Amino acid sequence: MAEKEKKKKNKRSCTYIGGQAVLEGVMMMGKTSMATAVRDPDGEIQVEAKRVKKGKHLARACKIPFVRGIINLVMSLVRGTKTLMRSAAVYGEDDEEAGRLQKWLAEKFKVNLMDVVSAVSAIIGVILAVGIFIFLPRVLVDLIPVIDNKHWAYYVLLGVFKLVIFIAYLALILILKDIRRLYKYHGAEHKTINAYELGVELTPENVAKCSRIHDRCGTSFLFIVLFINIVIISLATWAFSTYVYFIDNKILRFLLNIGIEIVLLPLIAGISYELLKFFAKFDNKFVDIFKAPGKLLQKTLTTREPDIEMIEVAIAAFKKVLEMDADETVPESEFVTGGILSKMLEATKKKFKENDIDESDAEWIYSLVLGVKRSELKKERMVRPSESKLIKEVEEKRLAGRPLWYIIGDTEFYGCTIKVDERALIPRPETEQLAELAVKSLEDGDKVLDMCTGSGCIAVSVAKNCTAKEVTVTAADLSDAAIMLAKENAALNGVSVSFVQSDMFSNVRGRFNLIVCNPPYVKSGDIPKLQKEVRECEPRIALDGGDDGLDFYRRLAKEVRSYIAKDGMLLLECGEGQAEEILKLFGKRDYAMVIKDLSGVERFIKIAF
Image (cartoon, rainbow, N blue to C red):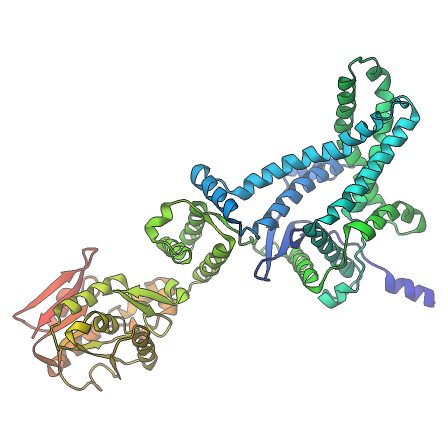
């Protein structure tokens, strides 16, 4: 009874999820998705998740015994190479020489250096594999003059050389620090899968206690491939040796043998895959004999004990695959890597357009993060991963609906840096014209009142641009929060402004040579029609001008005479189509004019008293 309970406790279920170690991370592969988790240079775990899409014919082929092994081998090689290069791209902070090469490729050919490296690496990888594991063993055996390819000893030695070269290769690459870390992530991958199959909660502490050896490891697959390779190639070469032997040219004969071996690789892959799947179904002493070499290689060479941080990465990849396989609505995600500026900017613009966001916001994001003018974005360059990460953070917040300048935290306004947040409206470009009109209207010693100051942008910019005129500036607003923000902006720009919390003129004292006002002027019924980020993020109190948008102008017309000095002036900003109605509120004036903004809209009203 006790023995049965022990077996039941140790019984494990086999998951369909497999994995691969990559640079500073782990890739996990499920039925419908794959996820690669990498710890980036900032110590954060980034996860790239993709849906695995197979065509109808390919899906059918993947169910055919032996054929599926060939398909899986090719797909694994392609996917593995791409995943390795993607993980490497997260570490794309290149040195100066690489940076110059990146820039040259981007400017001349609009090509990413990592794409070139990926293609070249794949080609070199194939050449090295053929050279080391096919070409070299043949050369070594042929160096032994007393044995020809008709003798059984030839094939025994060929197999021995292949085995020795394979193990020596795995051992030699351990000299490289990056490979040793790769093998640690390989161990983290195995531990995570083992923990899940044992029904253990996937916490770093629990996973760390599990074995780093796994039956379905690629190392075991490679060993089986090697064993089948030795058997099949030996038989095939021996079978064709009678025909090959009659070829006089030794080099041609040698190349023909190499060709036979390359042609037979798909058959070897197919048989090896079926054997690996067969052995994975059983757990007994007989099957353990065939599993033992692969497990020994894992234990001694291809896996190392990972640290907790590596295990965290492997768990992140595994959980993402579980999540995506369970729910097809879970969106894909990408690493934040560097890239070609024009392509990245175009991709961001496309996202913004699809989400009804002004494409110019994309240009502002890249301009601010990269520290260049918007006009200079046309000049091609590579965007580094660190820059791309900042761009991505702002982009995601913008896509979530937050206004760009609230995300950035400040904006430039008529020579001033103005802090902006949800306490006040974001200063608009046309309002800079209002500030300019105010500055040009002032004379030495004038007193200015900025009514409905909001962020304080007008009051601060007037004070900063009129220091030589010794102008006195007062700013008023109903909102306490807006007054606090305006005070912060005055301090930020080093100017002196007096602030008054006031419902229009209720707490204002004295008379002013210039009263400038940009009041709320949006019709109450039009607010739901505004852009989402405006109506949901910017304060309604700073937008709503009543049923016709003119409520504040009526109050101004009624009260302003008591607060404006003789020969004083009133400057107003208004909405499109409101100017004539506002002029009527102030009655007949000797001097009153409407001024258009840079877009040709009647935006400003100038009234002399």
